Length: 219
Image 1 (cartoon, rainbow, N blue to C red):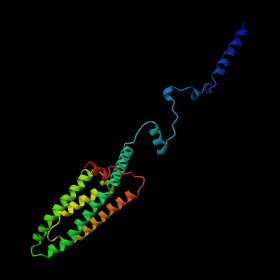
Image 2 (cartoon, rainbow, N blue to C red):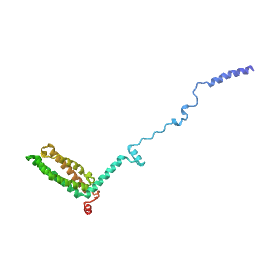
Image 3 (spheres, rainbow, N blue to C red):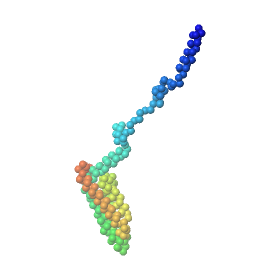
Image 4 (cartoon, one colour):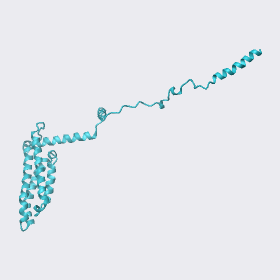
């Protein structure tokens, strides 16, 4: 009996010593499954601006800037169609504006040389204002107060500059160093208007709308 007890007592410490080896645990915590909140979603690949635009388009998104550009393009084309339907009218008006500039250029030196410069100018201006009033009336009636056809050929810009020019006229205007420059600028603008009209006439893709003949028939 003593021998058995001794053997048991000897084995027990050895068994305990074998369990406490100081080695790391067999289970690797780094390989344990993580909680859903700890999992990182795979990053989506970045899209190029072109791909993003195409994706937004497919999703039905309309860019406000694209809408505005499309609207401007449509208005410009409608403007040109109106001009093509009234080529004779537009050419007559630009010719009349050219004559108005001629009369001022011819008369200004005479006003300056007159004894009463302002008096000479006022006498000229009486008939000049009447002629311009009729000219502007024809312009407004044809274009619906500048709403039709004027933007695409920049006639509206010329009209504004022309009216400002007339407001500065006086008996001694020819002595102003800006007078000749202003006249030259207006003539250049008018030439650009006529060039735009010619371009519209030659463009076969533009269909005329609201022709002068139609307007004459309504009257």
